Length: 349
Ligand SMILES: Nc1nc2c(ncn2[C@@H]2O[C@H](COP(=O)(O)OP(=O)(O)OP(=O)(O)O)[C@@H](O)[C@H]2O)c(=O)[nH]1
Ligand SMILES: [Mg+2]
View 1 (cartoon, rainbow, N blue to C red):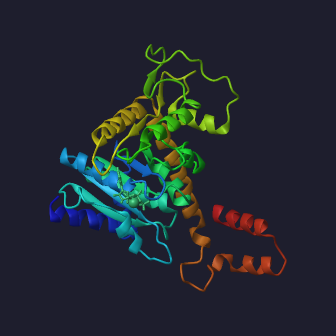
View 2 (spheres, rainbow, N blue to C red):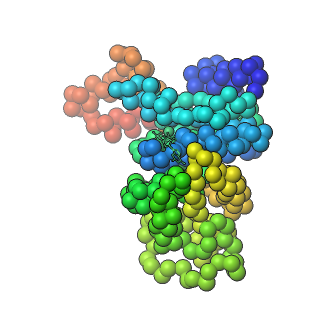
View 3 (cartoon, protein in one colour):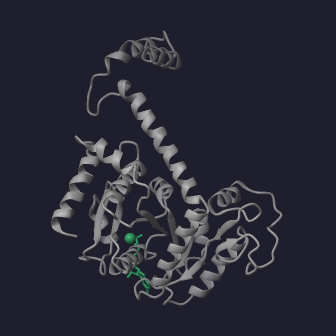
């Protein structure tokens, strides 16, 4: 990308982040785009090789001429400041590549939460013709859960010797994966880790890995397990389809690769495309989009509704409209719920 374009992207993003003049027009345009960049989330335990894979995938797509953005979530530890980020992000292959844009994002201090900010960022990057946005998260903590609401495709990564995938199950990662990767396949134990993961997945999914069509002759003729449906299984079926009802369902594949050697990275890139296509065809992408829109609308509404009552950041003074009610509550002359109803009645006029 030319320096002028890079500056324009940076300027546009800052305008939106700082809610400076013109940010509403930019978002207005971005949210009217028919299709955004595909958001690829990479998650897994610390040290699994997420950054190395992110770098390899980015280089793979950028070499093919695609414009790729990388969003790095800085954990903002109060102890280490931002210094951790430099260590966590390895960009050997994609660094300096022309069509790669890199942006770090602190996990703290976002009005309306990290995913609100990240969603706006994806929208804005889509204005600049980015084909994909890749996000790495550690797979633990609230920030990660939020980011997964945004991902169009989530890659869950594990490595041999972590108790063979049990670790992933424990961390609640089994539920969010669209694709599973056993990284460091250049080391012993990858086969057994992959088999254990496949075993765990086959207990919840029906069919062969990848796209399954109803009456698919290649799918093993195995009846769907006749167990009572747990909330977890119900969530998986909402996400990947129910073989009893849907024409198109998805069974997450387990792939072995070596991010450092670049082995199977091209195959993973292909699998991501297959999943994203399935997701669009089966209506899952649209369904996720509606869930996202719902969460964003609720956030936007609460922001607007609360604005007259919220104390400005750093200010001592309470907004005049709520002062008398604060006194009444503090003196035992009204309950908070009564005060809230009275205040809303007032603004409703
Ligand atoms: N042998 C081998 N080592 C790998 C592979 N992929 C990554 N590594 C190494 O594993 C270590 C951690 O890699 P990172 O990519 O930083 O892992 P990460 O998951 O991003 O780590 P955090 O961000 O700290 O959670 C580095 O020393 C990598 O070189 C692989 O395929 N094989
Ligand atoms: Mg990392």
